[in-house]
Image (cartoon, rainbow, N blue to C red):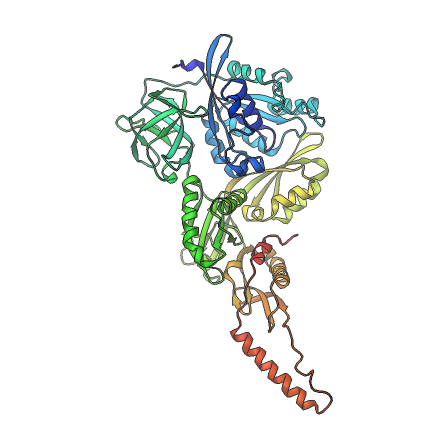
Length: 602
């Protein structure tokens, strides 16, 4: 049944983590009869175990619903968005494919940082916002106060806000009516040449990459010769269709509609989110705005615990990359850990997810080195040519170094006014500079900081949650590179540099962190038959030292009385033995030592 453009509605749901986005999607699907009783389950669109367990959406999903409103048939395309700050580019592309958004706010928790940042994205794309007050049936709900917060934020009338409870199924009818009445129908010219936006792609092990797209102009037909504009590659549309719970094959997808496309692409890297699909013979001249290559923000080394598993780890990483094009990796070797990979991630959550998926899906136990961000170094010889530094060992020699630039972010933290002091001192400790402070309501404050990305990579989020008793929400956007005084701190064990523990740190923090690292390693490294010095050094200068004392055997125990020279000879002999042992001795670093360096403040 082909519907006219005015009967199509494309919308997304934006919310902070755990405000009920996936539950609301479940209820909409049930109410419109898109799922049968047999297919029903909680978090229906979250099909990864990890998503269900953590209650977060990692991969965005799209689904089509049919609904009859006042005797008229409508097609509703729900384009779901991931909920975490690491995936903000994917969120922006999903939002660009819609005309309207449901803004879901928890009646108990009120507005959080993620809600605001996604709301700004939606407003930039001129989306019609429908505010939904969710979880009104909770005993801790505070609907009147949160309604005022939403009115202040959006400048809408209190009557525009739909009270609902996705769990109990309240207000779902009103939400569907609002989508049809308030969200505008798609605009576009069916006569123009094809112009479609890719907002997601999924890897299917049997059929290759399935590309999800939204047609802005023209239409796409089965068997058509198409071209992806960013990569410049052309393919044939082997199969197209719409995204019901099970895919429905179609002959044509027209302007304004959302669908999937299978072209037999084998690698996820060939399909770039935000790319434009057009006709190969009669291409459109203008690419859809906003496309960018997703750049990894955080880098870490991943090594197999057993060096023999290197090839197995490589094939596991390649399989993961088929599912997740934003994961980048290249082989590297370390003196301490053997062969492994240097991997780039979108953020710390992305790193955790990849690590967990390696363990679950491929039974790989891996060692992850200290994560760091990507810097740019400039030498005195060529002060205008940047050298990319993804690994501390890439940093040029300090004598030739002109400057190092590091990525900065604009951090937005929303918290209760009681916690402003602790949050500020945490951010200042992490080299943040406060740029703005706004009271959203009497007891809720939004703080804006400019701070280095490297400082939030380790434990910032956990500590923020601790000092604010869980009441602070955090969101960030990159704002470019700034020059910084950075030094490379090496850790030496028994006078040998352990490259896996090297870190690039700010000059002011280098001494404290170097000292903490040495103290932590002293606790974790098992004692040997000889003294093990643990040192932190900047270049040739040692800045901190701890010693793991030797296990001593009392060689003089059998000498009762007698001449002191006898005892001295034995002790001298033992001393020589220890010295020789230390020269040839090898110190094993336990796995927990690598992890402990990340949690220095605990």
